[in-house]
Length: 256
Ligand SMILES: NC(=O)c1ccc[n+]([C@@H]2O[C@H](COP(=O)([O-])OP(=O)(O)OC[C@H]3O[C@@H](n4cnc5c(N)ncnc54)[C@H](O)[C@@H]3O)[C@@H](O)[C@H]2O)c1
Image (tube, rainbow, N blue to C red):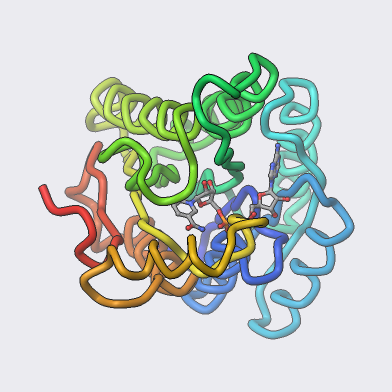
């Protein structure tokens, strides 16, 4: 099933990011890919590189997942590319774009709260709402949402209250939509990574990074590829009976 479909990955342009690693893992598994990111030039470059390396169709475009008009524009670009045969129909959506915030609760402004909720939670909603109708028409789809261990244990890695709240919203969204879509052919699942070795924790000190590692039984942070492979698995035919589930990828740092 996979090689006849396109995977759309949001937040997929950052160097060392989970999104880019996920796009690469999809491409390696034979999927065509659409790379979406706030940074449209970087998205186009990543798409070019993957298209060449894996001989797949690949398209890059700019999007702000928190902005309804921007999401509509990006999905129109995707729809046009499917219609004129530049890419196969969209069979998977990985909602990976996200931002964090390490600000303590009473110092958090409403603007910071709104931005973290907008990118992580509303972005997941808007992208899913835009791409789901075509998946339902196709009778096949895999939606994988990015949560975090932060949602499950109340922070404790880097992001604080707004981040935990937004990532918990992603889990509720995943379960409720999975239930609603039931046996439509579209599955909706989530991943909840612990600390991953990316640039998202900008500004964290060596001491903070050491404290994060000390709390992980495996004794190290995850590589972006270790998260990417699980997302691609959730998008595969082998995951056909997983509906509304969350896969923890946290090195044993949170067990439940
Ligand atoms: N790194 C970790 O430790 C970790 C752990 C758990 C969950 N996560 C989640 O994984 C996802 C990816 O994180 P990462 O560590 O690769 O981060 P990253 O900062 O390396 O990459 C995030 C990407 O999202 C893009 N982006 C940000 N806002 C956007 C918007 N409004 N619209 C479109 N694109 C946008 C950025 O340009 C960037 O390319 C995030 O949702 C993050 O919360 C990360």
